[in-house]
Structures are given as C-alpha cells and as structure tokens.
Image 1: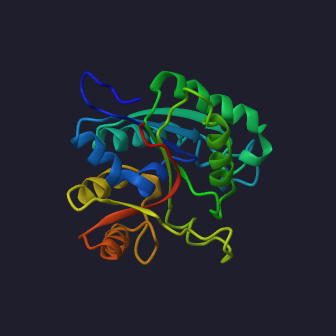
Image 2: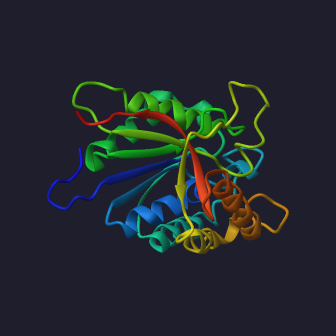
Length: 235
C-alpha cells in the first residue's frame, strides 16, 4: 500500500551477502531515494566465513569492517540496512523457516510496496535459498503487500549459472539508472574487501559497461535489468 500522505513508496531489497544489494539494484535504489521513496535493505548472510575450510575456522576479524562497509554503501544511496548473520555460502545448512522468519520480521516493519530479491537461477546457493525464502515470506494472501516483486542479477553469480532455460535470467523489467550509475559505483567502492580489478564482473568499468548494455536494450544510456516475479495493479 502506498503512503497516501506523501505519495512515497516503501522499497525492500533482500540480499544474501554484503554487496549483492548494490550490484543487483544499487542504481534503482538510489533512484527510488531521489524520488522520495523509503528504501530498506536486508542482508541475510554474514559474509567472509566461506573463505575458510569450515565456518568454525573462519577468521572473523574482518567482520566489523565488512559491516561498516555495508552501512557506508547503504548511506551512499540513502537507504537503511539491517544486517543478519546467517552462515556465508551455507544457507542450505539452515532451516528455510529460519530465513523466512527473518524476512517476515522486517516485512512487518517496512510493509514494502516493492521488493527486490535475488534471481532463482543464480549459481550461488545462498541466492537461490534467499529467493525461495522471500517467496514464502511474501505469499500472496489477502491484504498482504507488496504490489511488485522483481528479481535482480548479480555479476559473478547470475551469469555463471548453468545455461538451462530454468536458470536463465531473462529480463522483463528495466530501470533507467543513467543519473544514478556513478552513485552505484561509489556505493560498491565502499566494500573495500569486495573490490575487484577488470575483467572481473564486479570491477567498476565492467559494471558501467554492463549498465550501458542493459540500457541499450531499451534505448537509454544505462539501466539495471530485472525479471518480474509478481505485480499487482490497483483496482
């Protein structure tokens, strides 16, 4: 339900890991903020710990820095962020209901009009679990928001999935980000530990090129692409 007193919408982006939210829809979120919408981010996973052989052996000394970076990235686009601590790249070891409940908790507070979430066909297991949990949390029951759910792509995950029709990212919805692309790049640069050099898909120049490619698909200078999961038009 849209806030009738201000005309603003409530946006919720759900991400498995710190930086997914910026990679997937940082430009769109920045655009929402510019239009006066309220943007909230939920990051479910702790990040980093999958780089060790086991979670118990992981060096957690970098966690405060990563959480600081996540907050800085959210601030760069004008959003609020909530950080959870589900095990990095081990979401399939957690009861799905626990992740659903985490999403439902923020859902009750935000009551979003629009939800952005991972694509179901991503290579990363945490992304796939996040999508499934979001679908459970946002079951289309009477009186339940949101009006729209869109799946975003994450460079170095969505494009690396198996090349089957079931996994393919086939966009149906584009958001122009010509005015917010550099804001997205700045937000991504807040993630010091996640920076990569070209030709890695997360490198700044590659992100710019990809946004221009997505924009060229629909006749604008830069865009982010999404798959429409669900939209509900008002009566």
